[in-house]
Image 1 (cartoon, protein in one colour):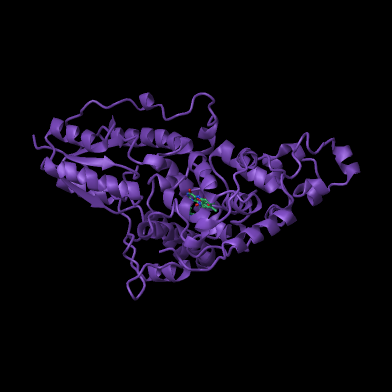
Image 2 (image 1 turned 180 degrees about the vertical axis):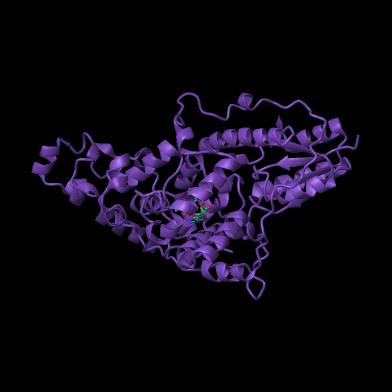
Amino acid sequence: MSSPVILWFRQDLRLHDLPALHAAAQAGDVLPVFVLDDDAAGAWTPGGASRWWLHHSLAELAASIREAGGELSLRRGDTATALLALCDSVGATQVFCSRRYEPWAAAQESAVNERLAAAGIGIKRYGGALLHEPGSVLTKGGDPFKVFTPFWRACRREPIGAPKEMPTVRWAASRPRSESLDDWELLPHSPNWAEGWETLWAPGEAGASARLNQFLEESVQTYADQRDLPAIDATSRLSPHLHHGELSPRQIWAVCEQYKDAYPEASASVGKFQAELGWREFSYHLLHFFPTIPEDPFKANFAGFPWSTNHEHLERWRRGMTGYPIVDAGMRELWHTGYMHNRVRMVVASFLCKHLLIHWLEGERWFWDTLLDADLASNGCSWQWVAGSGADAAPYFRIFNPITQGEKFDKSGGYVRRWVPEIADLPNKYLHSPWETPADILEHTGIVLGEHYPKPIVDHRSARQAALDAYEVVKISNTAAA
Ligand code: FAD
Protein backbone atom coordinates (compact mmCIF):
# COMPACT_ATOMS: atom_id res chain seq x y z
CA MET A 1 0.00 0.00 0.00
CA SER A 2 1.46 3.43 -0.99
CA SER A 3 1.79 6.04 1.74
CA PRO A 4 -0.93 8.73 1.64
CA VAL A 5 -0.52 12.47 1.30
CA ILE A 6 -1.91 14.70 4.03
CA LEU A 7 -4.43 17.43 3.19
CA TRP A 8 -4.25 19.93 6.03
CA PHE A 9 -7.56 21.84 6.13
CA ARG A 10 -7.33 25.34 7.56
CA GLN A 11 -9.70 28.16 6.64
CA ASP A 12 -10.78 26.39 3.45
CA LEU A 13 -13.59 24.13 4.63
CA ARG A 14 -14.83 22.96 1.23
CA LEU A 15 -14.22 20.30 -1.42
CA HIS A 16 -14.96 22.24 -4.62
CA ASP A 17 -12.57 24.71 -6.25
CA LEU A 18 -9.89 23.93 -3.70
CA PRO A 19 -6.45 24.00 -5.39
CA ALA A 20 -4.77 22.18 -2.49
CA LEU A 21 -7.22 19.26 -2.81
CA HIS A 22 -6.67 19.07 -6.56
CA ALA A 23 -2.91 18.91 -6.08
CA ALA A 24 -3.18 16.37 -3.26
CA ALA A 25 -5.53 14.16 -5.30
CA GLN A 26 -2.99 14.05 -8.09
CA ALA A 27 -0.17 13.23 -5.72
CA GLY A 28 -1.68 10.15 -4.07
CA ASP A 29 -4.26 8.81 -1.65
CA VAL A 30 -5.56 11.69 0.44
CA LEU A 31 -5.74 11.74 4.23
CA PRO A 32 -7.61 14.91 5.35
CA VAL A 33 -6.93 16.50 8.73
CA PHE A 34 -7.99 19.60 10.64
CA VAL A 35 -5.91 20.75 13.60
CA LEU A 36 -7.39 22.94 16.31
CA ASP A 37 -4.33 24.82 17.52
CA ASP A 38 -5.56 27.00 20.38
CA ASP A 39 -2.32 28.92 20.79
CA ALA A 40 -1.33 29.58 17.18
CA ALA A 41 -3.28 32.79 16.63
CA GLY A 42 -2.28 34.38 19.95
CA ALA A 43 -4.45 37.44 20.59
CA TRP A 44 -6.44 36.68 17.44
CA THR A 45 -7.68 33.25 18.38
CA PRO A 46 -11.22 32.90 16.94
CA GLY A 47 -13.92 34.54 19.04
CA GLY A 48 -17.05 32.90 20.42
CA ALA A 49 -19.21 33.40 17.33
CA SER A 50 -16.51 32.13 14.96
CA ARG A 51 -16.05 29.03 17.08
CA TRP A 52 -19.77 28.30 16.83
CA TRP A 53 -19.51 28.51 13.05
CA LEU A 54 -16.33 26.45 12.98
CA HIS A 55 -18.01 23.61 14.90
CA HIS A 56 -20.87 23.35 12.42
CA SER A 57 -18.69 23.89 9.38
CA LEU A 58 -16.33 21.11 10.45
CA ALA A 59 -19.28 18.78 11.07
CA GLU A 60 -20.51 19.51 7.53
CA LEU A 61 -17.06 19.01 6.01
CA ALA A 62 -16.59 15.73 7.86
CA ALA A 63 -20.00 14.53 6.61
CA SER A 64 -19.19 15.46 3.00
CA ILE A 65 -15.85 13.66 3.14
CA ARG A 66 -17.49 10.61 4.71
CA GLU A 67 -20.11 10.61 1.96
CA ALA A 68 -17.30 10.70 -0.61
CA GLY A 69 -15.64 7.69 1.04
CA GLY A 70 -13.01 9.33 3.26
CA GLU A 71 -12.63 10.28 6.92
CA LEU A 72 -11.67 13.69 8.30
CA SER A 73 -9.17 13.32 11.10
CA LEU A 74 -9.49 15.89 13.90
CA ARG A 75 -6.49 16.78 16.07
CA ARG A 76 -6.05 19.34 18.81
CA GLY A 77 -2.73 20.84 19.85
CA ASP A 78 0.40 22.32 18.33
CA THR A 79 -0.01 22.07 14.56
CA ALA A 80 3.51 20.98 13.64
CA THR A 81 3.48 18.30 16.36
CA ALA A 82 0.08 17.01 15.25
CA LEU A 83 1.06 16.90 11.57
CA LEU A 84 4.36 15.19 12.35
CA ALA A 85 2.63 12.54 14.45
CA LEU A 86 0.07 11.93 11.74
CA CYS A 87 2.73 11.68 9.00
CA ASP A 88 4.68 9.30 11.21
CA SER A 89 1.69 7.07 11.90
CA VAL A 90 0.79 6.59 8.23
CA GLY A 91 4.22 7.04 6.62
CA ALA A 92 3.24 10.25 4.77
CA THR A 93 5.98 12.45 3.34
CA GLN A 94 3.92 15.24 1.83
CA VAL A 95 1.48 17.79 3.29
CA PHE A 96 -0.76 19.97 1.13
CA CYS A 97 -2.59 23.05 2.39
CA SER A 98 -4.11 26.39 1.43
CA ARG A 99 -2.31 29.59 2.28
CA ARG A 100 -3.58 31.93 4.95
CA TYR A 101 -2.61 35.57 5.10
CA GLU A 102 -2.86 36.68 8.71
CA PRO A 103 0.59 37.55 10.11
CA TRP A 104 0.29 34.79 12.75
CA ALA A 105 -0.72 32.25 10.12
CA ALA A 106 2.21 33.13 7.88
CA ALA A 107 4.52 32.66 10.89
CA GLN A 108 2.79 29.35 11.64
CA GLU A 109 3.35 28.17 8.06
CA SER A 110 7.07 28.92 8.30
CA ALA A 111 7.37 27.15 11.64
CA VAL A 112 5.46 24.09 10.39
CA ASN A 113 7.52 24.07 7.21
CA GLU A 114 10.74 24.09 9.20
CA ARG A 115 9.70 21.28 11.55
CA LEU A 116 8.35 19.10 8.75
CA ALA A 117 11.38 19.72 6.55
CA ALA A 118 13.67 18.60 9.37
CA ALA A 119 11.77 15.28 9.36
CA GLY A 120 12.06 14.97 5.58
CA ILE A 121 8.43 15.92 4.95
CA GLY A 122 7.56 18.42 2.23
CA ILE A 123 4.78 20.98 2.51
CA LYS A 124 3.06 22.51 -0.51
CA ARG A 125 0.89 25.62 -0.24
CA TYR A 126 -1.82 26.82 -2.60
CA GLY A 127 -4.08 29.86 -3.05
CA GLY A 128 -7.84 29.69 -3.27
CA ALA A 129 -9.06 32.18 -0.69
CA LEU A 130 -8.74 35.25 -2.90
CA LEU A 131 -9.21 36.27 -6.51
CA HIS A 132 -5.62 37.53 -6.65
CA GLU A 133 -2.74 36.49 -4.44
CA PRO A 134 -1.59 39.36 -2.21
CA GLY A 135 1.41 41.02 -3.81
CA SER A 136 0.37 40.05 -7.34
CA VAL A 137 -1.42 43.35 -8.02
CA LEU A 138 0.91 46.35 -7.73
CA THR A 139 1.20 49.89 -9.05
CA LYS A 140 3.18 50.41 -12.25
CA GLY A 141 6.11 51.39 -10.03
CA GLY A 142 5.87 48.05 -8.19
CA ASP A 143 4.47 49.53 -4.98
CA PRO A 144 1.43 48.40 -3.03
CA PHE A 145 -1.76 50.33 -3.72
CA LYS A 146 -3.07 52.38 -0.81
CA VAL A 147 -6.25 53.53 -2.48
CA PHE A 148 -9.09 51.19 -3.38
CA THR A 149 -10.25 52.48 -6.78
CA PRO A 150 -6.94 52.15 -8.67
CA PHE A 151 -6.28 48.85 -6.88
CA TRP A 152 -9.60 47.45 -8.06
CA ARG A 153 -9.05 48.80 -11.57
CA ALA A 154 -5.71 46.99 -11.67
CA CYS A 155 -7.33 43.81 -10.32
CA ARG A 156 -9.89 43.91 -13.11
CA ARG A 157 -7.08 43.73 -15.65
CA GLU A 158 -5.83 40.45 -14.18
CA PRO A 159 -7.39 37.19 -15.36
CA ILE A 160 -9.46 35.14 -12.93
CA GLY A 161 -9.33 31.41 -13.61
CA ALA A 162 -12.46 29.29 -13.88
CA PRO A 163 -13.45 27.48 -10.69
CA LYS A 164 -12.95 23.73 -10.57
CA GLU A 165 -15.33 21.02 -9.48
CA MET A 166 -14.26 18.57 -6.81
CA PRO A 167 -11.62 16.23 -8.28
CA THR A 168 -11.83 12.47 -8.17
CA VAL A 169 -10.16 11.65 -4.88
CA ARG A 170 -8.76 8.32 -3.69
CA TRP A 171 -9.13 8.66 0.05
CA ALA A 172 -6.48 7.02 2.18
CA ALA A 173 -7.35 3.57 3.46
CA SER A 174 -5.60 4.26 6.77
CA ARG A 175 -7.98 5.96 9.20
CA PRO A 176 -6.09 7.19 12.25
CA ARG A 177 -8.42 7.71 15.18
CA SER A 178 -10.01 11.15 15.12
CA GLU A 179 -10.75 13.27 18.15
CA SER A 180 -14.40 14.03 18.77
CA LEU A 181 -15.66 17.42 17.61
CA ASP A 182 -18.02 17.61 20.58
CA ASP A 183 -15.08 17.25 22.97
CA TRP A 184 -13.64 20.48 21.58
CA GLU A 185 -16.53 22.43 23.14
CA LEU A 186 -16.64 25.07 20.45
CA LEU A 187 -20.33 25.66 21.11
CA PRO A 188 -21.43 27.95 23.94
CA HIS A 189 -23.40 26.35 26.73
CA SER A 190 -23.91 28.69 29.63
CA PRO A 191 -25.49 30.97 28.56
CA ASN A 192 -26.16 29.57 25.12
CA TRP A 193 -26.36 32.91 23.33
CA ALA A 194 -26.37 31.12 19.98
CA GLU A 195 -29.64 29.35 20.65
CA GLY A 196 -31.68 29.54 17.48
CA TRP A 197 -28.79 30.43 15.17
CA GLU A 198 -29.33 27.16 13.28
CA THR A 199 -32.54 28.61 11.89
CA LEU A 200 -30.68 31.69 10.64
CA TRP A 201 -27.51 30.16 9.27
CA ALA A 202 -26.45 27.01 7.46
CA PRO A 203 -22.68 26.69 7.93
CA GLY A 204 -20.88 24.43 5.46
CA GLU A 205 -20.29 24.17 1.75
CA ALA A 206 -23.85 23.15 0.85
CA GLY A 207 -25.27 26.02 2.92
CA ALA A 208 -22.90 28.46 1.23
CA SER A 209 -23.92 27.34 -2.20
CA ALA A 210 -27.63 27.48 -1.31
CA ARG A 211 -27.19 30.98 0.08
CA LEU A 212 -25.43 32.12 -3.10
CA ASN A 213 -28.19 30.68 -5.29
CA GLN A 214 -30.87 32.29 -3.16
CA PHE A 215 -29.12 35.65 -3.39
CA LEU A 216 -28.88 35.37 -7.17
CA GLU A 217 -32.51 34.37 -7.49
CA GLU A 218 -33.97 36.91 -5.10
CA SER A 219 -31.72 39.88 -4.48
CA VAL A 220 -28.82 40.47 -6.84
CA GLN A 221 -30.89 42.51 -9.29
CA THR A 222 -31.85 45.01 -6.59
CA TYR A 223 -28.53 44.85 -4.73
CA ALA A 224 -27.22 48.21 -5.93
CA ASP A 225 -30.40 50.03 -4.90
CA GLN A 226 -31.22 48.21 -1.68
CA ARG A 227 -27.91 47.10 -0.19
CA ASP A 228 -27.94 49.99 2.28
CA LEU A 229 -31.36 49.18 3.72
CA PRO A 230 -30.92 47.05 6.83
CA ALA A 231 -34.63 46.18 7.16
CA ILE A 232 -34.46 44.26 3.88
CA ASP A 233 -32.62 41.01 3.20
CA ALA A 234 -30.90 42.66 0.23
CA THR A 235 -27.28 41.58 0.62
CA SER A 236 -25.76 38.14 0.15
CA ARG A 237 -24.88 37.30 3.80
CA LEU A 238 -22.08 35.23 2.35
CA SER A 239 -19.41 36.78 4.60
CA PRO A 240 -19.22 33.97 7.22
CA HIS A 241 -19.15 31.37 4.43
CA LEU A 242 -16.37 33.25 2.64
CA HIS A 243 -14.42 33.75 5.84
CA HIS A 244 -14.43 30.04 6.60
CA GLY A 245 -13.60 29.15 3.01
CA GLU A 246 -16.82 27.25 2.35
CA LEU A 247 -16.93 28.75 -1.09
CA SER A 248 -14.27 30.56 -3.05
CA PRO A 249 -14.53 34.11 -4.34
CA ARG A 250 -13.70 32.63 -7.72
CA GLN A 251 -16.88 30.54 -7.63
CA ILE A 252 -18.90 33.65 -6.78
CA TRP A 253 -17.16 35.60 -9.49
CA ALA A 254 -17.90 32.97 -12.13
CA VAL A 255 -21.63 32.79 -11.40
CA CYS A 256 -21.82 36.58 -11.40
CA GLU A 257 -20.24 36.67 -14.86
CA GLN A 258 -22.73 34.03 -16.09
CA TYR A 259 -25.56 36.01 -14.56
CA LYS A 260 -24.51 39.19 -16.36
CA ASP A 261 -24.40 37.29 -19.66
CA ALA A 262 -27.90 35.96 -19.06
CA TYR A 263 -29.36 39.23 -17.72
CA PRO A 264 -27.33 42.13 -19.17
CA GLU A 265 -29.80 44.62 -17.68
CA ALA A 266 -28.61 43.51 -14.21
CA SER A 267 -24.93 44.13 -14.99
CA ALA A 268 -24.61 47.32 -12.96
CA SER A 269 -26.15 45.76 -9.87
CA VAL A 270 -24.09 42.58 -10.17
CA GLY A 271 -20.98 44.69 -10.78
CA LYS A 272 -21.63 46.59 -7.56
CA PHE A 273 -21.80 43.30 -5.70
CA GLN A 274 -18.56 42.14 -7.34
CA ALA A 275 -16.89 45.39 -6.26
CA GLU A 276 -17.68 44.48 -2.63
CA LEU A 277 -15.62 41.36 -3.13
CA GLY A 278 -12.99 43.84 -4.26
CA TRP A 279 -13.02 45.46 -0.81
CA ARG A 280 -12.34 42.05 0.65
CA GLU A 281 -9.40 41.66 -1.72
CA PHE A 282 -8.15 45.13 -0.83
CA SER A 283 -8.28 44.33 2.89
CA TYR A 284 -6.13 41.23 2.39
CA HIS A 285 -3.77 43.16 0.15
CA LEU A 286 -3.36 45.80 2.88
CA LEU A 287 -2.88 43.18 5.60
CA HIS A 288 -0.18 41.54 3.49
CA PHE A 289 1.81 44.74 3.05
CA PHE A 290 0.96 46.39 6.36
CA PRO A 291 0.64 43.47 8.80
CA THR A 292 0.20 45.69 11.86
CA ILE A 293 -3.09 47.07 10.50
CA PRO A 294 -5.24 45.11 13.01
CA GLU A 295 -3.40 46.79 15.89
CA ASP A 296 -1.76 50.05 14.86
CA PRO A 297 -3.14 53.08 13.06
CA PHE A 298 -2.18 53.05 9.39
CA LYS A 299 -1.80 56.83 9.59
CA ALA A 300 0.88 57.24 12.21
CA ASN A 301 -0.36 60.58 13.51
CA PHE A 302 -3.43 58.85 14.96
CA ALA A 303 -1.17 57.23 17.55
CA GLY A 304 -1.50 60.33 19.72
CA PHE A 305 -5.30 60.55 19.50
CA PRO A 306 -6.86 61.42 22.89
CA TRP A 307 -9.14 58.38 23.22
CA SER A 308 -11.61 58.11 26.07
CA THR A 309 -11.63 55.21 28.50
CA ASN A 310 -15.24 55.57 29.61
CA HIS A 311 -16.15 51.98 30.47
CA GLU A 312 -19.79 52.72 31.08
CA HIS A 313 -20.13 54.17 27.58
CA LEU A 314 -18.34 51.17 26.09
CA GLU A 315 -20.63 48.77 27.92
CA ARG A 316 -23.74 50.67 26.84
CA TRP A 317 -22.53 50.50 23.25
CA ARG A 318 -21.85 46.76 23.48
CA ARG A 319 -25.29 46.08 24.95
CA GLY A 320 -27.21 48.31 22.55
CA MET A 321 -28.29 50.79 25.25
CA THR A 322 -26.95 54.11 23.95
CA GLY A 323 -30.33 55.76 23.46
CA TYR A 324 -29.70 56.09 19.69
CA PRO A 325 -32.10 53.57 18.12
CA ILE A 326 -30.17 52.75 14.93
CA VAL A 327 -26.98 52.15 16.97
CA ASP A 328 -28.81 50.03 19.53
CA ALA A 329 -30.63 48.05 16.84
CA GLY A 330 -27.31 47.21 15.18
CA MET A 331 -25.60 46.15 18.40
CA ARG A 332 -28.55 43.96 19.34
CA GLU A 333 -28.75 42.42 15.87
CA LEU A 334 -25.08 41.54 16.29
CA TRP A 335 -25.57 39.96 19.69
CA HIS A 336 -28.63 37.96 18.69
CA THR A 337 -27.59 36.82 15.23
CA GLY A 338 -23.78 37.04 15.02
CA TYR A 339 -24.19 39.44 12.12
CA MET A 340 -24.78 43.12 11.49
CA HIS A 341 -25.76 44.87 8.29
CA ASN A 342 -22.86 46.75 6.64
CA ARG A 343 -24.49 50.20 6.72
CA VAL A 344 -25.22 49.77 10.42
CA ARG A 345 -21.67 48.51 11.08
CA MET A 346 -20.45 51.85 9.74
CA VAL A 347 -22.90 53.79 11.90
CA VAL A 348 -22.14 51.94 15.15
CA ALA A 349 -18.39 52.07 14.49
CA SER A 350 -18.50 55.80 13.82
CA PHE A 351 -20.60 56.27 16.95
CA LEU A 352 -18.05 54.45 19.09
CA CYS A 353 -14.98 56.22 17.70
CA LYS A 354 -16.43 59.66 17.17
CA HIS A 355 -19.43 60.22 19.43
CA LEU A 356 -17.95 58.30 22.35
CA LEU A 357 -14.29 58.86 21.39
CA ILE A 358 -13.54 55.25 22.32
CA HIS A 359 -10.60 53.59 20.56
CA TRP A 360 -11.50 51.62 17.43
CA LEU A 361 -9.47 48.71 18.90
CA GLU A 362 -12.26 48.23 21.48
CA GLY A 363 -14.83 47.99 18.73
CA GLU A 364 -12.65 45.72 16.64
CA ARG A 365 -12.27 43.39 19.65
CA TRP A 366 -15.99 43.27 20.35
CA PHE A 367 -16.71 42.51 16.71
CA TRP A 368 -13.98 39.87 16.78
CA ASP A 369 -15.78 38.00 19.50
CA THR A 370 -19.35 38.47 18.30
CA LEU A 371 -19.26 38.40 14.48
CA LEU A 372 -19.65 35.11 12.66
CA ASP A 373 -17.63 36.62 9.82
CA ALA A 374 -14.93 38.10 12.11
CA ASP A 375 -11.99 38.42 9.78
CA LEU A 376 -8.64 39.92 10.69
CA ALA A 377 -8.20 41.69 7.35
CA SER A 378 -11.73 42.98 6.76
CA ASN A 379 -12.43 43.83 10.39
CA GLY A 380 -9.15 45.66 11.01
CA CYS A 381 -9.28 47.60 7.74
CA SER A 382 -12.96 48.48 8.14
CA TRP A 383 -12.53 49.79 11.67
CA GLN A 384 -9.60 51.91 10.59
CA TRP A 385 -11.60 53.10 7.59
CA VAL A 386 -14.39 54.36 9.82
CA ALA A 387 -12.03 55.83 12.43
CA GLY A 388 -10.27 57.78 9.70
CA SER A 389 -6.87 56.31 10.48
CA GLY A 390 -6.84 53.69 7.70
CA ALA A 391 -5.68 53.53 4.10
CA ASP A 392 -8.15 55.25 1.78
CA ALA A 393 -10.22 55.96 4.90
CA ALA A 394 -13.33 58.04 5.32
CA PRO A 395 -12.09 61.56 6.10
CA TYR A 396 -11.92 62.21 9.82
CA PHE A 397 -14.59 64.90 9.66
CA ARG A 398 -17.11 62.44 8.21
CA ILE A 399 -19.08 61.77 11.36
CA PHE A 400 -22.14 59.64 10.71
CA ASN A 401 -25.19 61.29 12.19
CA PRO A 402 -27.07 58.41 13.84
CA ILE A 403 -30.39 60.24 13.54
CA THR A 404 -30.26 61.09 9.84
CA GLN A 405 -28.65 57.74 9.00
CA GLY A 406 -31.63 56.05 10.65
CA GLU A 407 -34.12 58.33 8.91
CA LYS A 408 -32.49 57.79 5.54
CA PHE A 409 -31.75 54.07 5.58
CA ASP A 410 -34.51 52.84 7.91
CA LYS A 411 -37.18 55.25 6.81
CA SER A 412 -40.16 53.12 7.69
CA GLY A 413 -38.47 51.92 10.86
CA GLY A 414 -38.69 48.17 10.19
CA TYR A 415 -35.13 47.55 11.37
CA VAL A 416 -35.32 49.57 14.57
CA ARG A 417 -38.74 48.18 15.45
CA ARG A 418 -37.44 44.62 15.04
CA TRP A 419 -34.45 45.08 17.35
CA VAL A 420 -35.63 47.82 19.72
CA PRO A 421 -39.22 46.70 20.33
CA GLU A 422 -39.62 48.84 23.43
CA ILE A 423 -40.01 51.93 21.21
CA ALA A 424 -41.88 50.21 18.37
CA ASP A 425 -45.03 52.23 19.07
CA LEU A 426 -43.37 55.57 18.40
CA PRO A 427 -44.43 57.23 15.16
CA ASN A 428 -41.79 57.15 12.37
CA LYS A 429 -41.15 60.85 12.86
CA TYR A 430 -39.63 60.25 16.31
CA LEU A 431 -38.41 56.69 15.98
CA HIS A 432 -34.81 57.71 15.35
CA SER A 433 -34.81 60.51 17.92
CA PRO A 434 -37.17 59.36 20.69
CA TRP A 435 -36.11 62.18 23.02
CA GLU A 436 -37.82 64.64 20.67
CA THR A 437 -41.19 62.93 21.03
CA PRO A 438 -43.83 65.30 22.43
CA ALA A 439 -44.96 64.43 25.95
CA ASP A 440 -48.54 63.67 24.92
CA ILE A 441 -47.39 61.10 22.35
CA LEU A 442 -45.07 59.47 24.89
CA GLU A 443 -47.92 59.35 27.34
CA HIS A 444 -50.24 57.84 24.75
CA THR A 445 -47.73 55.09 23.90
CA GLY A 446 -46.88 54.50 27.55
CA ILE A 447 -43.15 54.79 26.84
CA VAL A 448 -41.11 56.38 29.61
CA LEU A 449 -37.69 57.41 28.36
CA GLY A 450 -34.98 56.62 30.86
CA GLU A 451 -37.08 53.71 32.11
CA HIS A 452 -38.25 51.65 29.13
CA TYR A 453 -35.56 52.90 26.78
CA PRO A 454 -32.46 54.97 27.65
CA LYS A 455 -32.12 58.65 27.03
CA PRO A 456 -29.14 59.38 24.73
CA ILE A 457 -25.85 58.84 26.56
CA VAL A 458 -24.29 61.77 24.71
CA ASP A 459 -25.76 64.75 22.93
CA HIS A 460 -25.21 64.41 19.18
CA ARG A 461 -24.19 68.01 18.50
CA SER A 462 -21.75 68.39 21.34
CA ALA A 463 -20.30 64.90 20.77
CA ARG A 464 -19.72 65.78 17.13
CA GLN A 465 -17.94 68.99 18.11
CA ALA A 466 -15.83 67.13 20.70
CA ALA A 467 -14.76 64.66 18.01
CA LEU A 468 -13.75 67.46 15.66
CA ASP A 469 -11.80 69.12 18.47
CA ALA A 470 -10.06 65.85 19.34
CA TYR A 471 -9.01 65.33 15.74
CA GLU A 472 -7.61 68.85 15.66
CA VAL A 473 -5.34 67.87 18.55
CA VAL A 474 -3.54 65.24 16.51
CA LYS A 475 -3.33 67.49 13.45
CA ILE A 476 -4.47 64.85 11.01
CA SER A 477 -2.63 64.70 7.74
CA ASN A 478 -2.84 62.07 5.05
CA THR A 479 0.68 60.83 5.58
CA ALA A 480 0.60 57.06 5.76
CA ALA A 481 2.54 55.28 8.45
CA ALA A 482 4.09 52.92 6.01
P1 FAD B 1 -22.44 41.74 0.69
O1 FAD B 1 -22.87 43.16 0.57
O2 FAD B 1 -23.32 40.73 0.10
O3 FAD B 1 -20.98 41.67 0.04
C1 FAD B 1 -20.43 40.47 -0.51
C2 FAD B 1 -19.12 40.12 0.16
O4 FAD B 1 -18.16 41.16 -0.09
C3 FAD B 1 -19.22 40.01 1.66
O5 FAD B 1 -19.67 38.74 2.04
C4 FAD B 1 -17.77 40.28 2.09
O6 FAD B 1 -16.97 39.13 1.97
C5 FAD B 1 -17.31 41.29 1.06
N1 FAD B 1 -17.44 42.65 1.58
C6 FAD B 1 -18.51 43.47 1.52
N2 FAD B 1 -18.22 44.68 2.06
C7 FAD B 1 -16.95 44.62 2.48
C8 FAD B 1 -16.07 45.53 3.13
N3 FAD B 1 -16.45 46.79 3.41
N4 FAD B 1 -14.82 45.13 3.42
C9 FAD B 1 -14.40 43.88 3.12
N5 FAD B 1 -15.18 42.96 2.50
C10 FAD B 1 -16.44 43.32 2.19
N6 FAD B 1 -16.56 41.93 6.80
C11 FAD B 1 -16.12 40.69 7.09
O7 FAD B 1 -16.21 39.79 6.25
N7 FAD B 1 -15.55 40.43 8.31
C12 FAD B 1 -15.43 41.39 9.28
O8 FAD B 1 -14.89 41.12 10.36
C13 FAD B 1 -15.92 42.69 8.99
N8 FAD B 1 -15.86 43.68 9.93
C14 FAD B 1 -16.35 44.91 9.63
C15 FAD B 1 -16.25 45.93 10.59
C16 FAD B 1 -16.73 47.19 10.31
C17 FAD B 1 -16.60 48.30 11.35
C18 FAD B 1 -17.33 47.47 9.06
C19 FAD B 1 -17.85 48.84 8.75
C20 FAD B 1 -17.41 46.49 8.10
C21 FAD B 1 -16.92 45.20 8.36
N9 FAD B 1 -16.98 44.17 7.39
C22 FAD B 1 -16.49 42.93 7.70
C23 FAD B 1 -17.40 44.46 6.01
C24 FAD B 1 -18.90 44.26 5.71
O9 FAD B 1 -19.68 44.90 6.65
C25 FAD B 1 -19.31 42.79 5.64
O10 FAD B 1 -18.43 42.07 4.81
C26 FAD B 1 -20.73 42.66 5.08
O11 FAD B 1 -21.63 43.37 5.86
C27 FAD B 1 -21.11 41.19 5.04
O12 FAD B 1 -22.45 41.05 4.63
P2 FAD B 1 -22.79 40.41 3.24
O13 FAD B 1 -22.08 39.11 3.08
O14 FAD B 1 -24.27 40.39 3.10
O15 FAD B 1 -22.16 41.46 2.22
